[in-house]
Image (cartoon, rainbow, N blue to C red; front, side, top):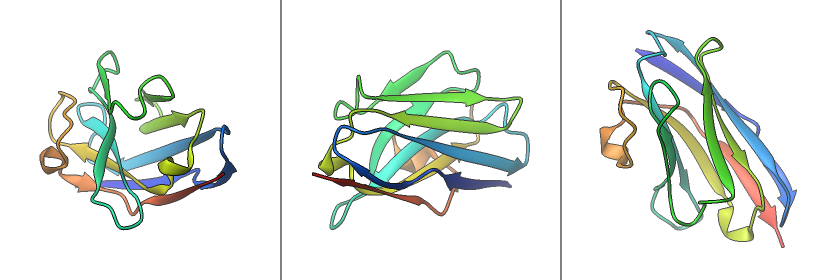
Length: 124
């Protein structure tokens, strides 16, 4: 089992920045690929970003490419999502996820463990 706890959400004005953190505990974190997903009001959960076990391979949704950066610190068992240039349409609950595999994937169905989520609200 892997337990995931997100933090760093909040309310920010459009154009602002936030950094989300996801702290992992339990089974080894180093060999897990990690992902961030989000669910906006009245919307389905969608992929945001993913990173492989070593941190040298990342993927992004087109809607966040160039604005968001995913990274990880295996020594701290933590994955981050740096969000710059935030837009009102980025408003959502952001979820951290881990999978029992090293490769970063974009499908939520390939992830085995999920955090409780952290709310991000962007005002115009």
